[in-house]
Length: 421
Ligand SMILES: Cc1ncc(COP(=O)(O)O)c(C=O)c1O
Image (tube, rainbow, N blue to C red; front, side):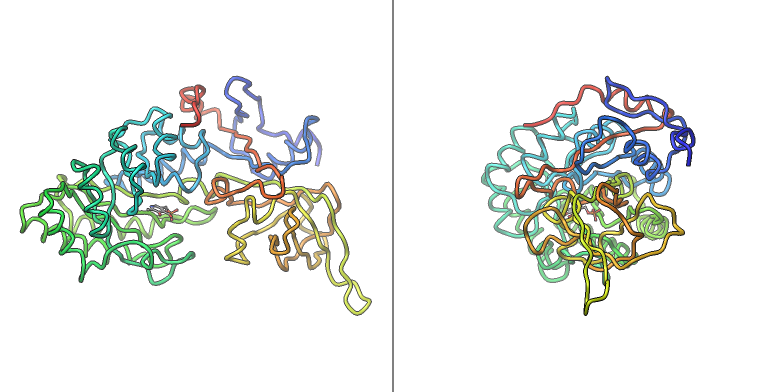
């Protein structure tokens, strides 16, 4: 491929914003090919993030579920530019701690646009939320109600119930969070009332990577029953929080979940007096981030004197962007810059640390690669960057952002980014 062709669509780099600006949709792999040709390339792994992809996801969300206001789950990817982009687009935010509240408020987000959606809160974090005016928070047990009564009595409480989808990509939440909707919820609503607390609604999370869309319907129906119970003891619930669980990888869509959610809302919550929010994480960021790693070392593996496979050592790993590989051996899907027609060989991909568990792919088919070649991983935006460590002294992979020129108006508002508490 000629250099000219490889550069197609990539127009300019804006020093002021730190964004590469493109004039037409560009393939991530082409973008990495282009970046790899620049002279200032060092040998560290890097992400490229397509901000336009996040903007398009937001537009799609509004189209698919117009009544459901997204409160982006910061834990999923807390890159300041992602937060600032979403703040500019007008989403709310789901924060799990004092640090996340600070990050989001530093982007200029109003406290009313934040839900403190961690049902277990330590006192210092609770007090911080109070100082910053973040009053809406989830709760799922009596100890927490008493704690809130003591430290933030005028908080607005959302009772989190348990309603796990039958199939989820990750461990279900019900073991850790959410009260039993049949056996515990009414008791907790009554307790909140007796403590003179302000309970305003119900929340649930059917599970990350939900693969049973009807779980949303079950949970919305259960919520309706609890709204009715609350009304019977003079609580006026006004908030339903349908949590996260929406898929975000390339090739997935939210249409099936959206149609079930819309139908259920219509059936159980027709009144516009109830605000409906969600806490999508993965949906917004997964497909927007592609990680480009480089092979720094390699060797051939022989079995019984015969070539068996290639071993590649790359400059990221399970203590960095690939923590998910510790739980899910099929998490990482590598691809290369080589032609698809090349012969494929059994390959093992290792991370860069000295730890023996630092394995990214156990057994994948790849063309023959060399030291310095790229191995690329798409769909790397969710639960990667915030969980990465610098174990063994290896730096976390940095992000290069790019955006379609037609979305520049969003980015222009983002240039002045403040980071930290
Ligand atoms: C309370 C809460 N809300 C939202 C999310 C985001 O979930 P997802 O990325 O599946 O949308 C999580 C993920 O852990 C969560 O714990």
